[in-house]
Length: 249
Ligand code: NAP
Image (tube, rainbow, N blue to C red; front, top):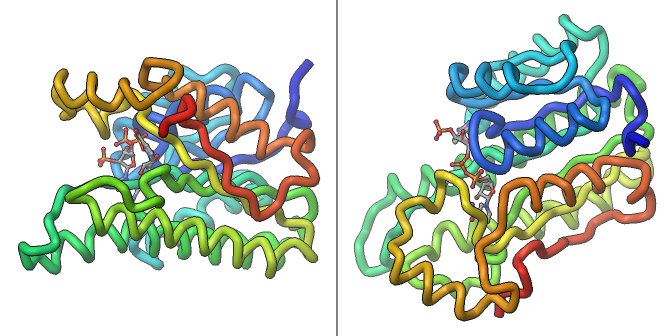
């Protein structure tokens, strides 16, 4: 039995790769209509091509740009005649940058995509939901990271951006719960996606020593949790941050 009501409309950012792509797959499997949004329209189209069902579209979005996000949401409403009631903020980037090395552009890039992007998508999605009186039973899921604990050396900006996502999730849940919009965060550990494909075998082994399940996670293992949070089965979970790390210490 499907865990989503048939015809639920979902918008996923970062849908052209990794976790976002898997979220699209699981949402479609559970009967949702999926808007696969990414800055790379080609990979978003590839995602749509392998989804179950037919009511899915690929859309260009640059989450750090307000106009781009607004246009994307307007296009969705034009196409489906309603706003999405499931929003998954998966677009993200990581950059290694040691604090001693001054580099404003790296800082801006990471904060703009990971934190400002989550903010803009949430704000514009919520305004569309309220305007369309479509807010009840809505669910926003933000992808933070276990890196929000600040323990990864050389990634202070990324770590801080993901800690910001947790704080924003909590604050948004306080503001939006009264309107029937739940907001939760998922904190993945090491998940095998293109984002971490640069990790050397040596570093991988070192990290695996800290994971009780003794392996990196698969994107579908994060996607299943996200789709649970999108469904009514999690109807009393709000403002939560859920770790999906294999027990990483
Ligand atoms: P991924 O495979 O690199 O996918 C990220 C997707 O987001 C890519 O398609 C990327 O496009 C897109 N994107 C980047 N900037 C964007 C922008 N400004 N606007 C729209 N789309 C944009 O990474 P992933 O591993 O699936 O990561 C998904 C989320 O999980 C991220 O927020 C990440 O920080 C988080 N996370 C991942 C891990 C992990 O171990 N993989 C762990 C913890 C948290 P391009 O390919 O063109 O850049």
